Length: 550
Image 1 (cartoon, rainbow, N blue to C red):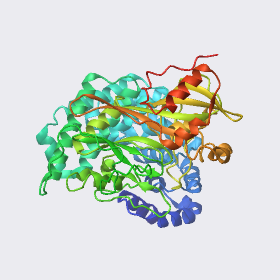
Image 2 (cartoon, rainbow, N blue to C red; image 1 turned 30 degrees about the vertical axis):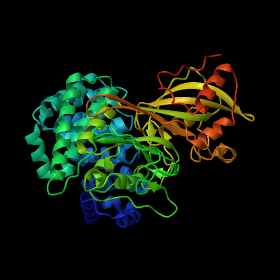
Image 3 (cartoon, rainbow, N blue to C red; image 1 turned 135 degrees about the vertical axis):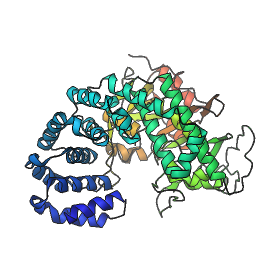
Image 4 (cartoon, rainbow, N blue to C red; image 1 turned 180 degrees about the vertical axis):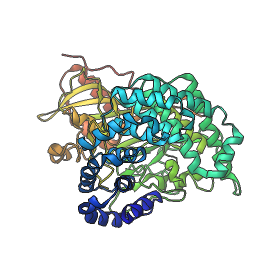
């Protein structure tokens, strides 16, 4: 009891205690017969919450809990299901027992427990229609009692499970609309005053997650989109106002402003060093940065003022660049890890291309709304191994990232992963010596870790010079292509006034040099290769024609 209670408390308080959890996993696995079912549940929940990998402990908990079914209560069943799903550990017998208990006692679960059970079985790809029907019927009469995180869990499960029906997601959307319609300037200011950036991030994050789920399922209504857009805008303004109190506010540059192409973090001096980031578009409340390879978009997960450190031999940190070009005294979001330092999306360390950053909280939530509603466009140019069939136009496969082992392991395509869609247009087939290659324009419908690299490797055509997902080619690739051939060349988004902005970035010199070494396999491929070689502004993804099918 003491072990499970202390583990539960440490996890609840988010105290750094990895050493303690490791010792518990080593010592209690053989003593679990002495644990009551609630203590087993608390122990599993604590390990999953802390993200501590302990497959042996979870195996032992599953075995012991399966023998104590008579003592199972809804809270314990919910915690066990959530913990095993969160840790991606599947035990067929225990999950069967928990499933049966959930169906039989659905009315006894509190809203958080109900949403956690539905989320867990959707996450493990084990949900069946009867579970969703039971959850829909029960939640319909208690929807007003669900907290934002519980609504988010229901929406995600409903959107991603293979057996989903529209009823549950529509009910969640209707409830969210009813709640957020009353969120005006006064209510937003009161929320920020009481709970700060964390409260605003939680409310906005849950609402945006429901928008993502509805859009993913093809059920995003105008009413939901506009209600959430207005609410998160109010929260952003309230945060900006709160941050402005008690400090000197310097005037922002008026209107649009294009920085000189070489502007970097070195005192704003234009020197054209391609190893440094540069601002390519500066608007009143948001900007676009060209990230070179070797820079990491974000590492820290702390709070306000928790800026990422740069380690010797490790990647440079883009948030630190932002803090130079956007002084925190004027733009406090660049020191707020809760809001990702204003950065909207990731881009792999070895990759290059365009990244958007918000200067204000209102801009951050506006851009997040566009991202979750599918209105934010990200286009890439990628060189892959082999000749990809020109009629392959989409890869729709869940991407799983290991979050338990604390090691930087490759992501994988796995049924328990997060939904991920990658759209492709094969532009050219080419040769490098005797190696067949494909030049591909890519547009992603989601933004999972290493998504493009994982998806192309999954279909047998990994990207060139990829040390993680194309190890068999990496040594030979590196002799002519110095780094991963993946470049985000185009972004499309709306500015604060609603005008659509398009930002383009031609191939960097290192990838341009690599492309020069290819020979086209046919006339159509030769035309496209030449277009990318001539340093002109690249076309949008829609404007490209696929390579004709032979």
